[in-house]
Amino acid sequence: MLFITMLLLVSMVVTAADKLTVYSVNYPLAYFAERIGGEYVEAVSPVPHDVDPAFWEPTAKDIAAFQQADVILLNGAGYARWLKRASLPQRKLVNTSAAFKNDYISVTGAATHQHGPGGDHSHAGTAFTTWLDFNQAIQQAKAVQFALEKRRPEYADVFRRNYAVLETELDNLDKHIMKLVTRDPDKLFVASHPVYQYFARRYHLSLKSVMWEPDAVPEERQWGELRRLLDNHAAEWMIWEGEPNERSVIGLKETGINSLVFSPCANVPNEGDFLSVMTENVLQLEKAYLRSK
Image (cartoon, rainbow, N blue to C red; front, side):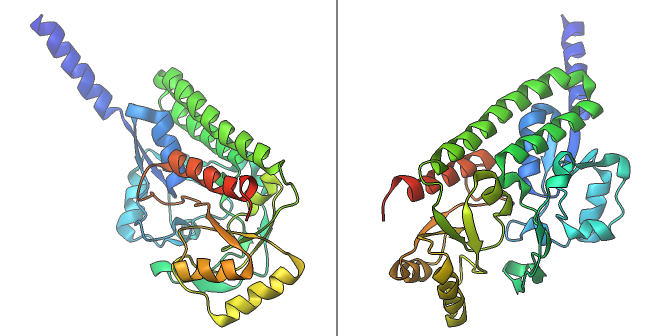
C-alpha cells in the first residue's frame, strides 16, 4: 500500500513538472490556452491591466520571460509591434491567425492618438482585433490546440475535448450575432474606436469609426467630426470599447444616438472571463436590434 501511495505521489510530481508554460501577447489567446490546456497548461498574459496589449512595450525582464516559455502565442496581423525588435525562439512561436492571413484587413489614413499609459500610437497598417470575428477566433483557438498537441501529444485527447467545448461556445456567439443582424441588415453604427473591422466584416455591419475614448469627454472638434460623419451615415447607435463617460452618453442621446458597449477584451477583464465578456457584448448588441429608441 505504501509503495502504491509513493508511486501516485511521484506521478503527481511528474505531471506538475510536465505542465506547459504558455505566454501570449494578449488575453484572448491566454484564455484559449487555459481552456484547451486545462491543468496541463500555465497560461500567462503578462501585460499590465491598464495597458492595451497591442501597444504594450515590454521590459527586458518581460522579454526574458517570453523566451523561457514553452510556447509563445502570437496574434498575427501586425499585433504587438514590439515583436519586431525582440529576439524570441522561432521554434516556440505560434501565429494563431496564419490560417486566414490572406484575409487580413489593411488600415490606411489612421491618425496618431493616445490613450492610457501606452503613449502615442496609430491604428494604421493591419487591423488586428481578429478574434472579434468569432469564426476567426475559432481558427485561432484551433491553432492553440495544435500547438499544445505538438508539445504534449500524450494529452491530445484532453486538448481536443476541451477545444470542442470552446468551439461550440464561440460558434454559438457567432450564430447569435448573425441571427440578430438579419432583423435589420441596414442598421447603421458608429464605433468609438477603429477596432471593429473584422467584427463589421463578419456580421455585415455598416459601421464607421471616430476616435473617442470611453473615459474622456469629447472635445468640440470631435463633436464636429461626428456631426459631419452623420450627414452621410445616419447612425442611431455608437459601439464603445468600454463603459463611456456619462456626459458623452448624454451628449450622444441629444444627438439621437444611443450607446452600447462591445468590449474587445484584449486584456484581462475586471470581472468574469473572455467568454462571459463576449456573452455580455452580444446582449449589449441586442439592444440595437431588439429595442426601439
